[in-house]
Every structure is written in structure tokens, then in C-alpha cells.
Length: 200
Image (tube, rainbow, N blue to C red):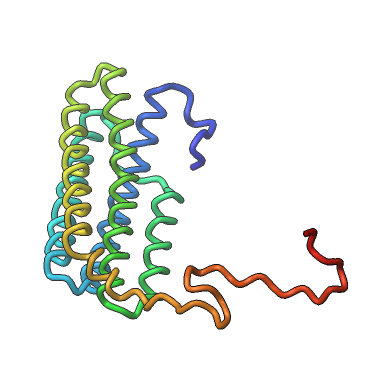
């Protein structure tokens, strides 16, 4: 279903559609995390991804509660955004051979997922409050806080370990080109005199 289809006529419709969108996203994330865990080599990263998988399962159950409170059948609607984020993460991971560089890439991919979820849940919380559904907003806020906390943990992990390790894998800086200056600038070409001489 398109984001703004004919089936979306009211804000209630929009809210439910967004719920279906994030419900689909959570299930796709649940499927993607085991593969990310398998590719990760850093122990802390593996542990973090495993914890996020357990958290994702709880968040899906929480969404089931939200649907029930709204007298709606829990279901997902295809979300090209999360599909694209996960596909890109798989493509990048498949191209990286060095394990420490791969760990840094996996954290970046996990954070892209987190930022998507933070955006979606933030909107849903605001809409739930606007629609007078504080009960639903409370459940969604719980998930939003978890997503923000996970993002912060990933940032700390990247800064403390993954990024420094990956940076050490950088190739040595190239030496200046033959005949170039030691400061990186090339020497000016000598004039052959055919295009005039420089003014005195």
C-alpha cells in the first residue's frame, strides 16, 4: 500500500498505516539481526546485537498490544525504506573482507536501522497523544526510549573500539608524486617559450 493511498482518509487511518509500517519493519529487523550477529567478530558487538534481537521480539509483542487496544488485527505493510536500509547493509557487509572494518560497518548499519525506528516511533507517539490515546502513547514511548538507548550504546561502542580498530587498517598515505613538492603540490611546468614569456 502506498504511503498516501485512497485508504488513508483520516488521521486515525494514517496512524494505523504507520503502525503497520513499523510492524513490518520490526519483523524484517528480527530476520536480519541473526545474520549481522554471525558476521560480527567483536564480542561486545555480538552481545549487543543479540540483546537487540531479544528487545526487538519484545517490541513486536508490544505492537501486538497496541493493535489490540485499537481493535485492529496486527499486520504489516511493506516498507521500502527499511528494506532498502537492510539491503544496503547486506551489500556493504558482503564487500568487506577485513573483520574489524566489517564490525565498524555493521555498527553503522545497525544505527541506520535505529534512526529509522526512532523517527517512526517518535511520530507515532506524537500522533497517539494527538488522537487522545495516551494508553497507546505510553506503550510506544517505552519502545522509543529503548531505541534511543540502543543507538547511544552503538555510538559508544563505535567510538571506544570499532572505529579506532578499523582506522588502523587504513592504507599508508601515498608519498608525493615524483617531481612533486614535499607539501603535496606539484611543481609548475616549465615554459617552452612558445606561448610567450612571463612579464618582467
